[in-house]
Image 1 (cartoon, rainbow, N blue to C red):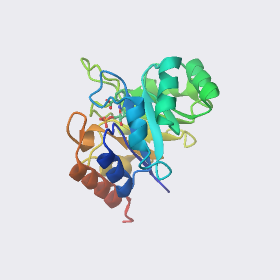
Image 2: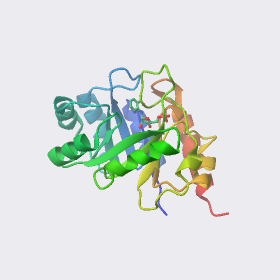
Image 3: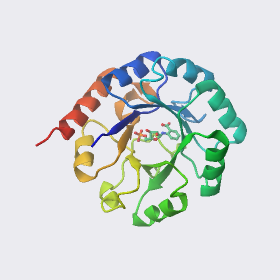
Length: 217
Ligand SMILES: O=C(O)c1ccccc1N[C@@H]1O[C@H](COP(=O)(O)O)[C@@H](O)[C@H]1O
């Protein structure tokens, strides 16, 4: 079984190049002003051009307006829009229809009840991204380095296509992949030396941990 690996919150050519050479299938750019990983769409587009065609380019936005999305699409030309706010199913459907792009809907998971929110987006979002709920005082809906109880996803309908996200790092990704079988994984702060600063050594260690976890016993 293949595993998609998305490295998110990239802001430099060097980190994007390294992520893809290490095996990232997706690279993510954050368009959320409060984030330490925020980048202007045109700058993200210039960086993404270095790996375009070798990895899928993902835009991460939070309750973006149509104008915001137009600017992101003009600047970045993403393959995928990850909607990481409280976008309704109707909004997701509209964005998908208007842009013609693949849509990933992020949902924050704290308990089993949160999984009931999947139903509304099924057949609308192309994929889900399950992240932890943000800590109480965080201004960020994602990128907090916090994980959730992965066992909540055990027993999820196998047809639900999702990436596991939230607080993954070299020390816990093996445990996560032993517990559940996501189509992909997504990491941001777990490969950073400081908020918004990707660390090439940490990225290498993360990919090495993923390889170890996927080796046949
Ligand atoms: O990373 C951010 O700053 C961010 C801001 C706004 C929405 C989403 C954001 N990040 C997403 O959250 C996941 C998980 O992050 P982490 O690994 O727990 O740090 C990240 O990969 C992005 O998809």
